[in-house]
Image 1 (tube, protein in one colour):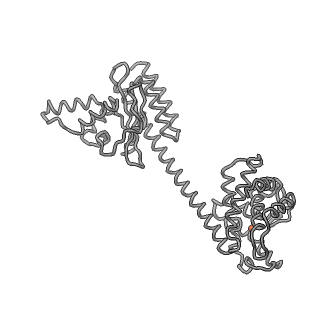
Image 2: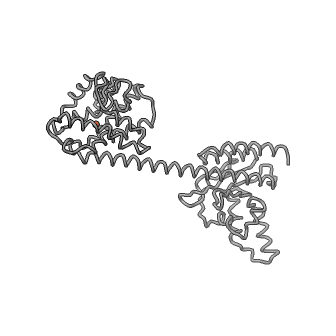
Image 3: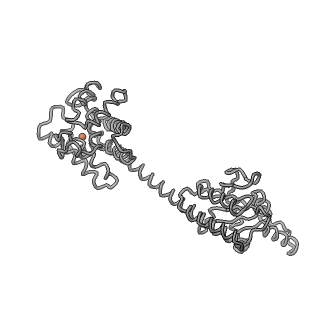
Length: 395
Ligand SMILES: [Fe+2]
């Protein structure tokens, strides 16, 4: 074995080990095939990959000299295609196992021996088809990449530029690389499955929150559409604050704000309809019961870990900037910003819609009311963002 060979192997080995951490296996394979061509001086190399969604194999990467490359994603093979099938035929397993690869020379020798020496008819269709197919793929050797019994990929190796044959130690080395690739593909598939599962759970969680939000409205028809509007206002205010540099950009913050806005009044589920629907002013006792909805809401959500990031906003959405709110009388910087945002969004919607005890005021009047309470009832930063949206006609 020459020193040059050892050098390229070490380089490829290191590269493939590093690349195994890449979750995007298509990128890994592109890099690997490109390095193979360059370092092992092949005229062409490519990779056929299994597409689990379509249950077929596709030529995903082709690299090499001009005229040798094959258009990618153009060639597709189903599981019954000879080039795929041969890797599962017990009869030919020894061919591949001996060499760690399927070589067009071996195939041709076998075809010749069967037809001439063994007196067979020489028309073993499968062998002929594969032997015809490989040159069309500009390949002299195909290295399978298995994960357990699953054929995940086939590494296509073209002839060497110097016309020399591929040595067995090189084929062994390429087989090890192919096995790394199979592991990387498997990891990427598992990672993708987990990601999808998490996304599915997340969607289910959001759908549940929306359903819960709707449940609150079902109990109190006067607030019809309130949850949806408050959520819209709250997210719009937060986006404006982000643009104004008054919020850290965090998708988690926005998600929690979205869910908390949907569920801010979830605690009203525990309040009697006699109080919720009362047209006259609430007595002090009734008002005390009504105020418990903030705490009740937090209690309802607390057993579910997914709601963890929303609980503070639900609990504190009636706190006031000067400390006159409930349930904890928090003030100024003590109030979570998401709660302060919901407070403004909630007040604006309450003012601009009819309630059992009073009719609505105009948007203009409501916006002025909110601005006049800035720094007293509401966080001035939230009010500034709110008022900017109002002036732009976005509320
Ligand atoms: Fe509320």
